[in-house]
Amino acid sequence: MTNLIVLAGPYRFEAHLEAAKAPETCEAFSRTLPFVTKIVHVRWSGEAVWAPLGDMEFGVGFENHTSYPSPGQVILYPGGFSETEILLAYGGVNFASKMGQLAGNHFLTFTSGLEKLAALGTLTLWEGAQDIQFNVAE
Image 1 (tube, one colour):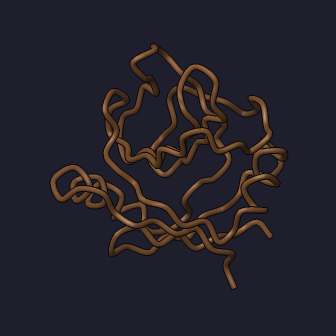
Image 2: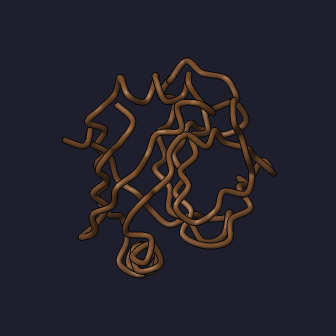
């Protein structure tokens, strides 16, 4: 399994797991599928939405990590200085928290629907939390 369908707010996206670059993160995330949560707009990081996951444990360290995900890239911050979270970039991002600069594991890249990312970000910013669901592509 390397392809996922992501339903976020009213939008549908296709995505590809970055298994060659982040194998442990992809394996850990795959065990949670289907993964359903809420996304809210980021506070410090720029143009992104995130799913705060509190003390959820994925059991992974850092791999293929970045502080600057590009639009359509999804990163998992496995916890440490801040809570565990998933962040989806829709524009310029400098991943940070009130503790300072962070880096997350780039484990998923959107492959379709990129033109809808900014609309998802705007919707989340102005209308509040949106449902998001990650499913295995059939």
